[in-house]
Length: 415
Ligand SMILES: Nc1ncnc2c1ncn2[C@@H]1O[C@H](COP(=O)(O)OP(=O)(O)OP(=O)(O)O)[C@@H](O)[C@H]1O
Ligand SMILES: [Mg+2]
Image 1: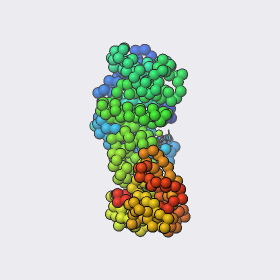
Image 2: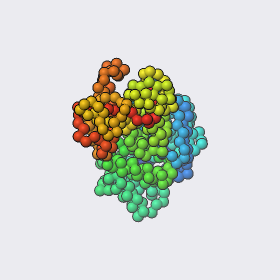
Image 3: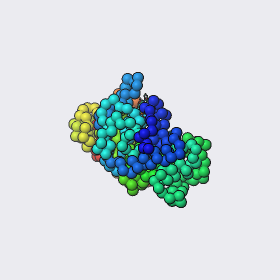
Image 4: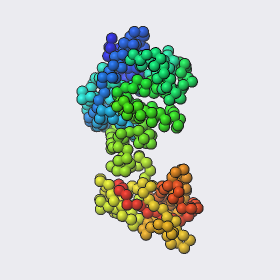
């Protein structure tokens, strides 16, 4: 009996959708059926995979006026790790669930390994899928849950116990191995599910905010572990998160989503250094919005020439998006002249408001002294955030001190 023969109804709610995850479906089945169905699923996991294409996908939830996915396009290479990043409600989970077949779509098509799987139900879709949450076997202990996939793959008893314990240790649950998952907290269950997903090393891994319930340290540990395993096994992975640091840290490419589509997809460094839109620039990392004059190729900001990124707007004034580390800061001495070391000839006077010492780096929030930009800045005095290595912070700099802030000649986006 194959997994495909189990009846799976169309998902009505998020929770139903997760219940329709094949792992969850196995929950309601007993004895040999469980093993046979799981074997079918896991056999798929090892023989399928490959690239993924989502082309002009449209998703409209029943009764909704807005499209949750609006001509959504995504092309993932075999073995690639793509992270979908974006604010709450932008359609990340919908994109993942549509890809998995947990949502029907109203337009476009989805290809997995070159095969069109559009309209193919979740249980018949020829793609390996492992969801990490809400799909544990409640009548099994944590370690048995993690072992399950290994068992049906024919991994020997001692070896699967060893791997399962290793995975549980990784997620910080080694001491809970013998506990039934229904007696565990949501966060603990999520960790068991993640351990189980990782233990079987699937070819395609779909993860929807898998680390959100974990504390900061475990989160970083696990995120790095997921990436290591992904690289070692060549698992095509789609990872959904709203945490930009997490996205930048693990992805081959990050797709920034906005209003049901990907606004830009690029390698983390490219995305950070060469954002295509204001939304992307402001979503990834910090950025200053400074007034400038632009001819489309170059802008003058605070008297300093700044080269512009492709797609930059021409105009006077425009907003030039300058990262905090791309602004130099120099102290002004008591007489009003620029301070000694490396004092810039150009730049704008500002007063230090707050200094955030962050260990290796320091971030200095300044308020521009001149009221020249107040009108441009919608009635507010212009603020500039500067980031610099902590050891380059001028000695004794304190709130209230006067400084000069100058953009560096690093490509920026004008909009
Ligand atoms: N079952 C549903 N029925 C109706 N509308 C839905 C349903 N699920 C999601 N939506 C809507 O579709 C849009 C996209 O939702 P989705 O869950 O994909 O967002 P998300 O990016 O995953 O957000 P989050 O970061 O909060 O998880 C939202 O406007 C949401 O309100
Ligand atoms: Mg979501």
